[in-house]
Length: 288
Image (tube, rainbow, N blue to C red; front, side):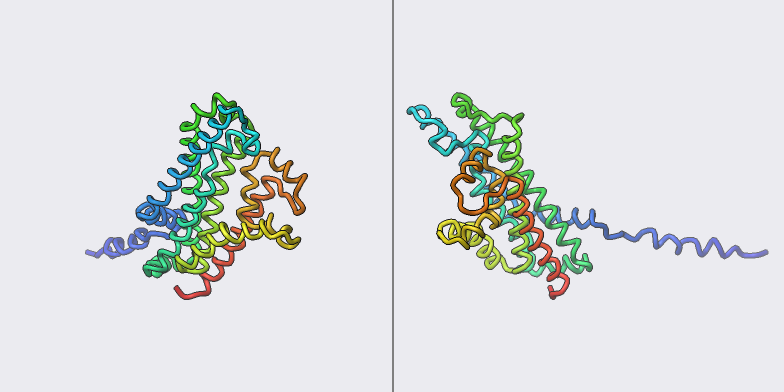
């Protein structure tokens, strides 16, 4: 009578099938779980929506008050309805910039980045996953804020011929351009956070660039500043939210370069790509 040894060896052959592979989709899912459970995410995104809707209501009230007193939309620089409902983008960019910095610098501040990089030893998938989650969320939140602004201001803008026409190509470019702009600004701030790895330093750098440096360049009447100013990130990217008539008017009076809407957005994207690429290189070389 013989013994069949193949039966005894069978259980050990199944241990390899139980291994969990680290894919980019799994890294994105883990970053999404961290992102949506942070209290700062809820506050910054909620503040973004409130600011954008509230400021669009104030602008709509100002326009309708002026027209009821004999003025017209030309008194406000020839703005269109899309400009009214996206008028809160200037303050919205500040909140998404804060969120972009905190998404990465917060982990360095708490030391959690070491756990993240231990789970993703190749490092770069974690960086790209954080950037992807941040950009998509910022874009979606901006779309929600714009939609709510359209609904909130519709009753005021309709009687003064400034109602938003979603079928107009220029209106669509301004509305979706605002969401694209805010997503790009959040990534710009994220890149500063990844480079500096300190929340206060990164916030000072990105807000100083957007609020101080770009305005200083606009105010100084020297050729160097006039030539460089159109290529700074916010100045260039905001071209995407301007009516073509306003850009044409700028071209007749400007002494420097006047970018088209998509040229301006391409310059903003170039800033994001260069800064994120530098952050990726340093992430591979520096200790956590």
